Length: 433
Image (cartoon, rainbow, N blue to C red; front, side, top):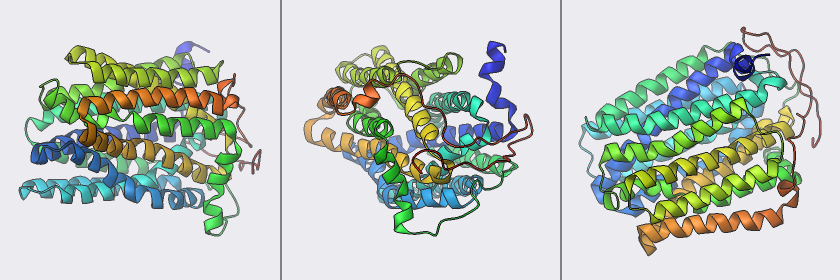
């Protein structure tokens, strides 16, 4: 098989291609919205703490909802759940349009919309993480993860830059474009042909079954180590939430410059994901995982010390590259180790860790910036990230010494190339059921 054919193998499956496009347009929209909301809120209040409150508003509804969302991802059509979530996110964009037209002077309505967005994200993440392995055969799954990550990071590159440019015409232009893109994502998800449910028996909804995902993760040291490492590393290294203040007060650039700064991590991550699509990690998995986190932490420190726009862009580029390595490894470990019958619930646990590291990390960065100042908050966050990586190397020796990825758990569905996914087998119980 040629290198190109191997790299693009997952694209031969229709439903995966539709999912990839929907995820790309949705991610572009969210990144554009993030730039516009951050700049609009900071221009109204001038308070770094309010930038952290944007993240907190998204996180507070996320925690109580995401474990329930994992149960739903194992009981209902994941495709339809994702479609509904895109529709709710589009509603958030429309609400932001309404606030802007009426002349927004206070910020609490924006926080309320971000809470609604966080609720939609809570239901989307478990289904979105769990659905990919259902759209391609096992031999194309690693390639599908790399392609999905590449497209997402491309969106992270384009979204902030496009959002910054469109913001020159006003936030209304940004939010209108955001709403249109999210509507397109919903239509693409509806256009997927879908597939039969993967389990014959649906467990009754109960608190015990909801917690199955948490128990499973805790029983797998490599999985638990990988996602908890990501949680605490990004929790303390969430400097990107402070970029509106950093761009304005340290680098003295406007919304276009902010868009470029928000783009740089995505550029680093996208290039890394593209390299992983051509040359996936197959050996020394643990070393790569910790190395990626170390690069991430060091890049945050460089960002805090920089007063140069090009150096700041380079630091953010490295930050994204290091983060992509850990994200790639964590996602493969979680999905390969998990039986499909509980994949939604395990993905929900993973989503809790991701949500805590992102949104709660943004709040932590805003809070420490309010307490200690903008630059000390960034530098200390990077230093703590490095410390976390060192501690986790000794706390999880199974992850540190891990050489290869595990084989997938359970049976793998059969697929027809170019015609969507048509599973003929159900996932077996496999290990850890």
